[in-house]
Every structure is written in structure tokens, then in C-alpha cells.
Amino acid sequence: MTYRYDRYRRLEPAAPFAAADGGFAAEIADPAWFLGRQWQLGEHRGEDAASPVGVEFDVRLGRIGALNASDQAGLTPADAALTADPASWWTIGRRIEIGRGVAATATANGVTLPDDPSLGLPPLPPPYDGIAGPDGRELHRRRAALGLPDSWFDPAPPPGPDDHWDAATFSYGGSFPVPGGTLAVADHPGGPLEWYAADATGTPVGGPAEKHAVLPSRLRYPGAPLPRWWEIEETRTDPGGYPPDRAHFASLLLIEAMSTHTDDWYTFPVPAEAAAVVFLESVRVRDSFGDTWPVQAPSDGWSLFGTKGLPPAALTVWHVADTPLAGPASDEIILVVDEDTNLVWAAERRVAGRELDATPPATAPPQDEPDDPRAFAYLPGGPMPHRWHPYRVGEVDNRRRFVQARLADLSGAEVVLTPAPVSDLLGGGATVHSIEPGAVPARGLVLERRAVLSRRTDGLPVLWTARRQSPAAAPPSTTFHFDALAAVPS
Image 1 (cartoon, rainbow, N blue to C red):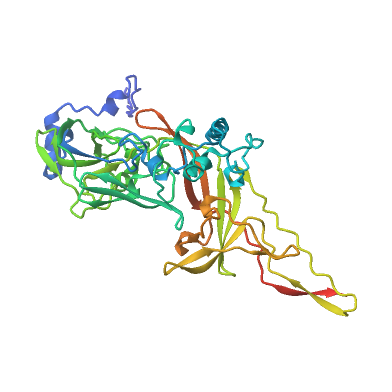
Image 2 (image 1 turned 180 degrees about the vertical axis):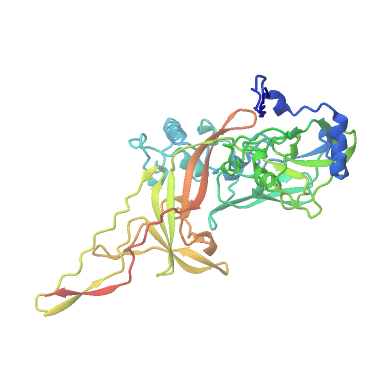
């Protein structure tokens, strides 16, 4: 009998009893075959792709000098030296204490202080609002005219910084000395002093060259591509979801690194000091093959952190206040451009820590005569809120300016002028204040004065009063209008 046997064959995957780490490691049994395969694919004809293993360079430091005679070079923060009010030392407590001390000393020596309201303390904010008496700051300012000896002022006020505030442009300007030139700051609105705020003048130079040898490290940042060939990227990684962070240099190169699809960016540390201009010279990179490659600055002179007037390989490292504490605004003024009347209005909202009343004065139309069948009431333009000060187009020293003016107060029986500004940010009423036309944008401007507390580079605290300008987020609208005749029913 014939028997028939049918055989069936099929392929089944073997159970992965072993770990998958070996597959992900991509180990090669024959390295020579792998090199030969690279040769066949032409990978050996590419450029040298060795990794950097060492960097050697020279560094020169040009120390930034003190801006004011009262500053200590390298210790006082640059933004404190530039933005400090000359009267920053005169806190409210010192004005009260020294004023009382001078009055007591004058009484003990048989001297009577003049009964002048301008020598007294102005209205103070809480919790000092119930305190009255002589103002120590005003007595010290007028001590020569009053015949007051310097020894009566205890503690003695130290020399204050120079005033670098330009009241016409509402900005700061000054020049920090460096060897061979200066770092000139112009039109600084206040606040932190960044590396791009200054332009170099002259030919700044550094000191003796210091040789350094450091180890480079691969650029790492959130969402960066993995450096190994067979590493699997995290699927939840979103490179576009990590904005550049100014506190981390590596993240500033994120866009460039992602646009070139590279994972071979390296960084290396450069020893530097605060309050200095760092000049980087003779940079040499040693790779894993033992070759040394010189690194030159871009031939077109471009640099991401370049300062105008400095070489491309120079970097300005400011000694700025780190995370300063700013108090509430003691002065707040809003400037508004009124296109209809060709005026600039300055509204004082807060002066010396006290809120100012901005309620418009009530005006009543003139009464109609009983025998008139119909009469008209003359309605003058306004009324404007209190503490709103106009600036008209004029000339100062043959330059077009907005010049401070005063309104006529028609609310009473007699025509008088409205009060002059109280805050010294607008001249304080002693001088006619003027503003550069380009200083106030169309959307308005906010001027503030705040107390700022920080630390010097040696750790000691430093307190100063700074002024600052910023764009107005929601400027108030003016209620000013032209004079009109309104019909009054008889």
C-alpha cells in the first residue's frame, strides 16, 4: 500500500527572551567590515569630523572704571551708578531725623530758623503722614544761605553721585572709562543696564594676556537632538516649545542649531570678571586626531553679543545689580499726546508717595438775565483734571521743544493760574521745563521714581532711587475742548 505524507513549513518569530539592549547598542562584530562599508559609501571623502577635545586661548581684561567720584570701580553696580538720583541718600527717615537734630542744635546755640514753609517737610505718605517739622534735606541744601555749619548735620551726608538724567528726553547718559577709551551709554530709559546699552569710543584695550586651556563640552538644551547615531528621540519632544532663555547661553543658539540639523555644537568656558571688557585672542582647538585648528572671528565683523566700537571677539561684562528689589512708585507721571490741540499733557498721579486728586473742578455756566428771551452761556474749554499740565510747541535755544505752560483757572470769581507741577520730574515749578518732541511717543509715556535695593559685587547692600520711563499701556484721554457758546433756555 502506498502512503502519502504531506509536510508543511512556516516561519515563526522567535520569542525575544533576551533583552533588547543589544540591538539598540548596534554592536558590530567586524569593525573592519564597517570601515570598508563606509569607504564604499564615500563617507571617508568628507571633511574631518573629529570631535574637539581641548581649547587654548588668550584673554585680556580691560577693567571698567567708576562713573562717579563716589563710586568704587568694580563694586558699585553700573545701573546704580548711572540711574541713582543725587538725593538717593536722603530717605524720609533721615530727612526727619536730621531736620529735628539741626533744629535742636540751632535752639541750643541761640539760632532761630526762618519761618519759611519751604524749609518744612512736604506732605508725607503713610506712615509718616502725621509728622511735621523741618526738612533736613532742604536745610542741608540751603545751609550756606542760612548760615548753618556742616557739623550740625549728623550723620553727615556723603557726596552723592552725579545726575545723569536728561529731563528733556527722560533718559540717562554717561561714559564709563576703560583703558584706551570709554563705554558711552546714551538714551537709556532706566532699569537694568544690558550689554548692548553702551557703545565704545576711542580704542579700548585689555591688560596683559592670560593663557588658558579648557575642555569643550557638547551643547545641550531642552529638545536638542541626541548625539549618538542609533539613539531614539523622545516622541514628546517639541523643539519649537522651548523659547530662548537669556539666562542660558546654550538656548540662544537653539534656532541656529535646529535650522542646520546639526548635533555637533560645542561650547567652552572663558574666564572673565564683572566690570571688564573681555578680549578673546589666539583661539586654538585641538581635535581627537591630535590636530590643532585656529579659530578666527567672522571676517565681516558680525557678533551676536557685539558692542559697537569693539572687536568682534570682545565682550562687555557689566557689573549690574542681580535681581534688585524695587519699592512702590513714589512719583508717577503720565504724558499724553493730544493731536487735536497740538499739546502734550503731563498728569501727576503720585508725588512723594501720595496720591494726587485728579477730579475735574466743577464749573457752573453763567446765569441768564431774566429779561432776555434767549441767552447763550460762554463755556470755556475744559475743565481739565487737577494736576494736568500742558506743554505747547515752542523753541528753547533755537530748538523745537514742547515748553511747559499753565492753564487759566476760570472756576472762581477771579482768573488765576493753575498750580505749577510739584514733582521735580517736571521741573518742580522752579524752572520752565521743556521736552524733546521725539521723547513722548504717540501712545503716551509713564515716568516713575522708585527706591531700588540690591547688592554690590562684594555683597554689601546698596540703596538708590531711580527714575524710569516706559510706554503707557492705556493712557488716559483728555477732556479738554475748545471754548463754546451754549444756548440757555430763558
